[in-house]
Image (cartoon, rainbow, N blue to C red):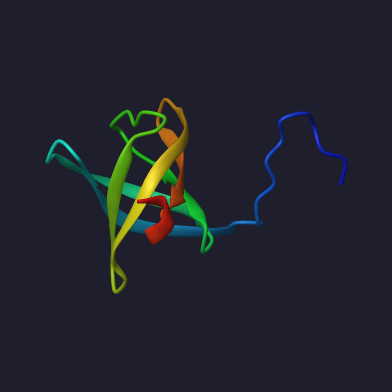
Length: 88
């Protein structure tokens, strides 16, 4: 694969449709849909606008809460990287 300048590689994400809830640091929450997923991150579809750099918790059925940080955002969708203990 030829990499574009400043390109950050990532693992291929698997298409999914998972209803979840995003909890923001300000105490608000909003229902979202995850549309792709790996052990490193996910794509979030939402009516609420998410901000690049924003930290949140994503509540997933049968998985509990996963801490994440928004890496990119567009109207209606965003990409999040799951945070590890070393990221916190």
